[in-house]
Every structure is written in C-alpha cells, then in structure tokens.
Length: 131
Image (cartoon, rainbow, N blue to C red):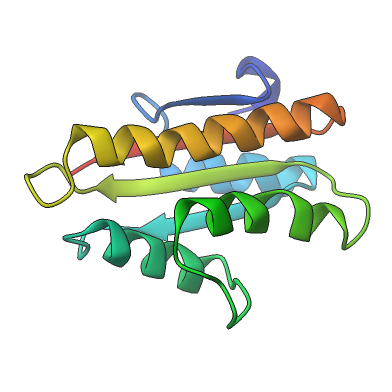
C-alpha cells in the first residue's frame, strides 16, 4: 500500500486497509505511525488514557479533548519539523458508556488536528475502526 493513494489530512474509517499495511506505508514514507488499540476502553476517560499511553503523551496530559488536541498539534509542532503522520484508532468503543456523541467528539479532535497539520503542509491521516 502506498500513502499516495489516500488523500492527505483526512480522518476516515479504516475499511479495506490493514493496520500492518498502514504501518509499513508510514515507515516507507518516513512518517510517524501512531497506533492505539482501544478495545479495552469503556468510557471517554479510558479512551483518552489509552491514547495518551500509546502515543507517549507527557505525564501532565490533562485527559480531556482540549489536552488531546494540544498534544496532537502544538506540543508536536513545537518539537521541530515533522515528516507526517499515520494515526490508527483501533476498536473504538461502541456502546452506551462511549456513545456516538463521545465518538464524534473524539474524531472531531483528530479532524481538527488534520486541519492544523494541513495548514502547515504536513500530511496527517487518521484511520479508525469500531468494536
């Protein structure tokens, strides 16, 4: 799989892509690959904690949507030039404790991050799947 076949600066369902192929494509393109398996999450707090752990966020991460956005954008941007990103949010919860509204809030953060990086001409692709 080649990343050129996927529009840059997008958040989309993983569908026909395999995680292994996305990881290899990111490596081939010299981009960061960020993967979070969220299968064990039940709540928004669980999801944020798993993402923070998987993406190696700093200990002071506030575990809220604003802090997630800051970590995905400003914090990384201030660390220097970036080669691009392939993000996979695998097995997002799909139940009453993490409902559609919570999922949309989370995905909106990643859409805003895609816009942030797109304005800086840096590719940011985010893929997600549901449990």
